[in-house]
Length: 420
Image 1 (cartoon, rainbow, N blue to C red):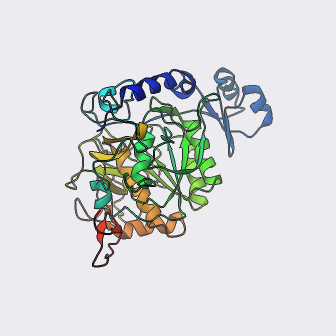
Image 2 (spheres, rainbow, N blue to C red; image 1 turned 180 degrees about the vertical axis):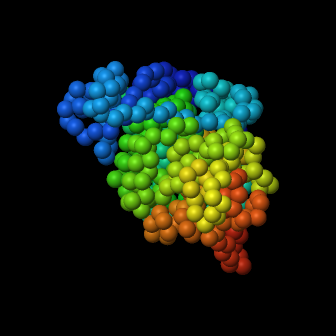
Image 3 (tube, rainbow, N blue to C red; image 1 turned 120 degrees about the vertical axis):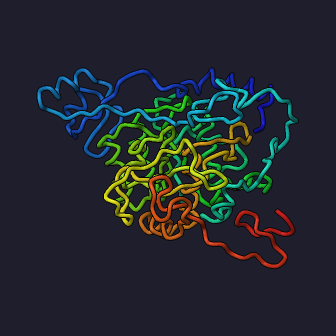
């Protein structure tokens, strides 16, 4: 992993201690979902976000009082976060979800001096092992992937976006800017396009269009209502695929309603199953909803990683995904991708596995979410127990292989002359 130059690190500290701090850390507060469309209650309680049949509020005491009177129904807004494998720690060489440039510079940036060039950093591998394993590296034309995460490094040469929004309390911050690195890493795996010079890194579907939704603070945590409104927003802005490398142990009606809204509008929703567990039935939300494609993690040898949470066991009907079940597994260990400051970094977790499936969905888009989901299942290669299993679901989807001309070389799904 490349380290940050001293000058760049200093500038970044200055920026983070200025305007971007508005979205740096999740505020310590309580929020409630209120399941009502009444303008009276909205005025009385105050509105944080509005969505179909409900709104969120910080007026917790009044809302609870109204609920005791039987006038409204409320539900506590869940908290979301990006997570890393349990063995991860600062100094292990991998910049994980709970780490940032400021909290762990040894993993996420440092003081190495480098010359300032148009392209200051070059990847050690343009087509990382995960991209090659799923036959990625090309395709995705005219497919819009919304990545709901910590934002992205908008100046990274290998990432281009067509739309950007955020749902946080960040009135003075720079919209969609990533102060964590997680969202930038995820985006690179989905659709990094190698830069205009072709010397950068490539994702699974580099021709896809990126929509950025910043729903998590720079510390990697966030509120459910910020995510819920972002799902609606992404759908209404024209996303074909919504990718979420985040999770919560809590299920709420508001989040499930948002996911169903996406499904009803032919949008494919993909999310990380979660890390840390070896207990059955601990898969995180929103991945645990049957309307969402849940993704587990494997390593370069196609072994299930120790941190990938298994799905639940339902009635053993392998043909139908139920709540709490893993659907696919994908590369999620030592994944190399884009990072802050135009750099590249390694990361592990189901957070890193999810964008491989999101990229494949873009590369293999079949016109709507339902058809694409079925097609991915058709292409899944069994990598664990025979048939469906709780760790890898239907297996790992792999894009069909094509043949390059005699004078060309297949560079991760792209034919090049004379070499990669």
